[in-house]
Length: 378
Image (tube, rainbow, N blue to C red; front, top):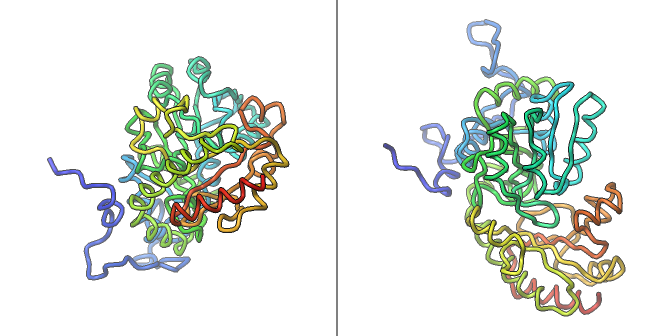
């Protein structure tokens, strides 16, 4: 039996064609010649909206990193999620989703109700009890945004198996470095590759990993919906994957130190980070994951305190993303969850003073100094 290569080796070398080039070329072309003048059908190369060699290389790498059979790359994470949902569901089906997912994902699923698809939205700890024989699909995040809760993916996967439901896990926050949902029983995995996979805040992309039959079906939907990834963006994500393990492990380490600093600060009411022993998610995260991620959320007194804190930052920038080399901060109530009702935000634990911090690759001492100065103004 062939020895399984490590994650960094896989990210760098897997899927590359044997040849003289060390760096795979960018196939910046919209079309491909039909061999012998014959019309091509199916997934053979003919048109880059359908397939492209640079995009295919990214897909091979991500399938291997997530322990999946096949992968499709998309123009964004939301394109990956929407294409998958449309490819799997039809009128009369039931989706069970965690309420604790990214706001746009929740809005997307609720919008499917107008097509006759029932959507049940519950908290993570209620998910297993809502999965029944009528459930077609279950959607969760491996680490939720922005409260960083960790669902029982193995338990949810077992409930899905018993009832014939399909489990989809958004693994953006954990990455395959910290957690691989397919190995825990998930059928499909999605990522916003804009975040950790690309890692440099210079490309928007998404990926979907799963069984070959399901990916072939999603490919037909991607072709018709048009959410394909362009070759240059694919190249940028491929480049990012080469340092994924190095970056994620360093961000894990820095986030742990910053979470511990924030937990001791008098201006901070509560810290959300699964790496803290005080976190209600700590034991489950230890069981499931190899690392706790590079995002830390924390609560200040109120909206006014949060705004003063954001205004006091100098090194850390306010911007709506995560996973890059630059440390970024957002205020969920006024950004990702602004279209969620105040009552539902309270149920989710998203307070007016909640701040989400995506820890980058700057020196930890500089980040803590910037946080300390901004907290003094909060």
